Length: 215
Image 1 (cartoon, helix red, strand yellow):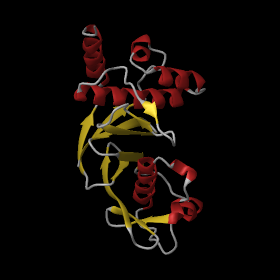
Image 2: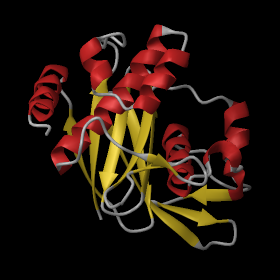
Image 3: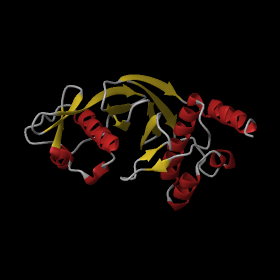
């Protein structure tokens, strides 16, 4: 399964820009209005723009049209493709694939406290590479749509996969480090990752051209 990751820098974005707002979905614009802080608005907008970049590459409409599944997981109305979004300090990501997918990211230098480890590690699970383990587990919960409603101690991550406590393989995972981020992708099939870094000016140009060709 080929999965493309789109990384959108967030720190330089103006969340009040009419141009960017025009390419955000109605749901995203509503969400942006509810976010109080500028950084939170930037990250939310960056996630939407990463999805816009993916939609442009796939020849899909922009603003992107998506729905929410039973667990609130976003999806295109008639997948494939499938997508998953994530953001952390300074950047947002969109993972797009022809198979169901989940993505998560944290800064590679993120400190992981003992308290966090107690919440994410299954009994007997190694605490090595804690940031990688954390994002791998969260990417799996985004794949299933369960999010943080499911206890991360109820499954383990090891050797590129997610496993039940009885040892059954539940999903495949791939991780990489890029731009100071530790990124993990989960899917029910084996994963081959590729990466696209989004330039804001180039994206604005591409979105404007797409808008000019709307019927």
